[in-house]
Image (cartoon, rainbow, N blue to C red; front, top):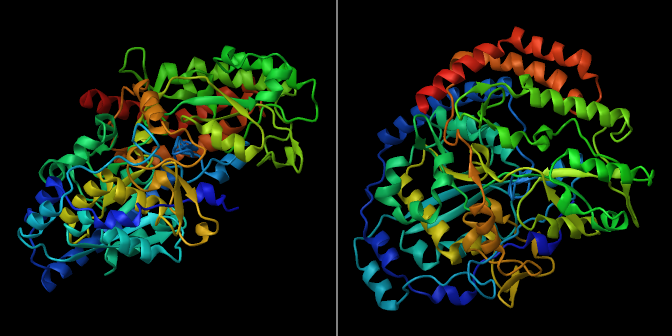
Length: 593
């Protein structure tokens, strides 16, 4: 179902922005020499040959990643979305529906200004500076194609043209084109063929964290930009906090993408209706752990028409039980103890995991988890016209998530964090922009990424569209124009630096300041930036992933008895080679540390 126009708003700065002139930054960009000579036919042929090789490697890597499995990407954060993950935290509406989470508001954008939610003023714009910059060495005109995870819309070309004519982009002598797809999975499925084709590809969005960003970078489908950042785009490097760049590092510490500056952490949380909690005298502030939630579940027993604990076998919620305090995730099969910061283990073989699945079995036997949880996909029957009967659910939390989700649900929701805010590889890679290895204009592409992430007018245009056509500003905040969602749509978390964008009407004007404050509470994973090379153990990872898919979802939901099945699960993991995986990751982690 389409989000409301208010949630889908996609904006550019007002028409007056086109009259702005550049400052010293744009002048420097304009005068920088980038190798203006077009690639010769021989060079293009060479690149096509390389692209074909990369495509073959990528196809093999994708197959290995598929077989190797992995933790499901956090719903939201993502921006929500999980999702969430995390996302903001980034969870998509689909994954939220599966786990009982009201769909998160989309397109949430905001301003870095202290007042009015308006985007920060660009630095040093004068007509004289513009003329001086343009008087410098002329750059060869180029077209930069942006592959975005959004549906193609009628006004895409209009917005791209507007962006191309903003002064900072004109200084690059770059024409921007959008290549939009309704789902990034579609792009990844086609990526090997695209890389082997003659289709121009410059910049692409990736939200796959360790599941797509890493394997694509490992076979060099994405360009290594580590050294280019300081030489070509120093303001970009400075605009995004160091923790994001650390999470983007793989292949011996190399950087293959520009992370989106948004919420940085993952935080597990429970949620319930405020009205229900107030009715039963439950202090949400006292719910600090999964065990504390028993008070809510006991109260739900008095209202049998409601859902209880909305467990879902399709979503890994085992981290709700405090594991984030004790372990950091390396990959799908291995974790590192936070206690000593160096011991690699498997979460499924820890005493904490055993305690968690036993608790879930206890809840299942008490009727606090639906008896059909093993086959249940959603809890949709608890939301009907005029009836809101959810019980206790969970999510990956991001700041202010409750505002949009309460609006979608129809009642005020209360979120109860049950873990720390943690910066992980996946939370920093949850929205990232890459330069394709086959790009014929890599330096110009990186310069455009710098402009996109540092100039509010560029960011807001891509995120919200055109003022007066797609949105109006109301007291400095974006108000979607009715019907504009059918003309242009781009989600804020998928379109560059959130912290320099507008806020939406109805959001706090200090939204991004609240995000920054939340980010400041985050703690870094002890393995932030560590990505193991699994080529020697890919067969064992695939075998273990099959075992996990057989046992873990049912143990996690309490649907099968851990007394009998947990020992079987652990033995099956050992038979599949989990101890070899642990040993290999321990060896690599020790060397990395």
